[in-house]
Length: 236
Image (tube, rainbow, N blue to C red; front, top):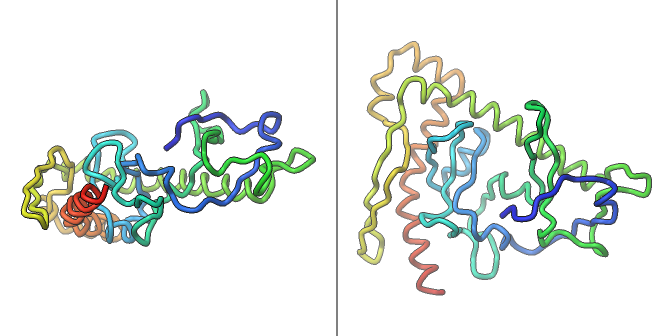
């Protein structure tokens, strides 16, 4: 999705404009996206949610069971379900890492279809100040970063208490074909049940158990995703 990133600079981008686009075809190669805690209940309705073995620790929504594909972008570029993860909505902007660990650079994808020189809202006004369009984008990035950090901290006990396991799922699609998917890292419900009452109470109060339930409820979406990709493949 992000292909040609460069840091926002008034001297370079003073004439850049953001134009509205129809659809999310720019995300057609996004096979997974990170999720914040505030997104999980909605995301769990549509996407399988798993936990990659990576840092920072974040829940991830699967958009595809194959790399480089997105089953939720139709052939016309339309998004096929009612929720779009924030990671996709923040495009064409993203926070880039700088040499200072607590500071980030605002980056933009210059190849994004949103970018125009003659249509849409400018990023900077004649005085070199950020316009409302850019200010809104920056505020969204800041909120996304804050929620990402909070989510990573919230779910850390799943690792510390060894609640995550790698699972293989064998899916029977609607056409009768069986497919296996390996290495999906999920919460072990049996291990959750074995936790002591104090830990469970702490996780309920912190909101972690709500995230666990959303995750566990989302797993059946693996079958739905396999069927969706089969339908899209037949129509291609």
